[in-house]
Length: 103
Image (cartoon, rainbow, N blue to C red; front, top):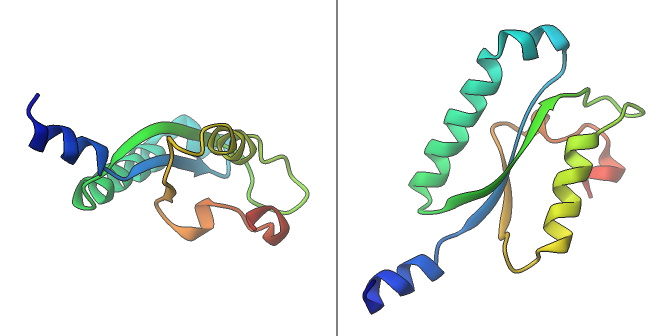
């Protein structure tokens, strides 16, 4: 690996990515999860970055419901502040509707 390649590797944006559906039926069909993953992969590629960790599955975004994957993603990022530059979701409603948790 030459110096130019090393410096490019160091400057990559590193993302933790979240893909999520709200119902068990959506998870079983799987198309929405695949579509979200493809959208994130394409966007990250355009940004010249890399996804360093994936999180997701089926869970409600409604306040009061468990947000295990969002919590797991946040914990991962907090434990590795130098390994993750940003979080990527395919659409803002995939994150959370609970404004307190979203902060």
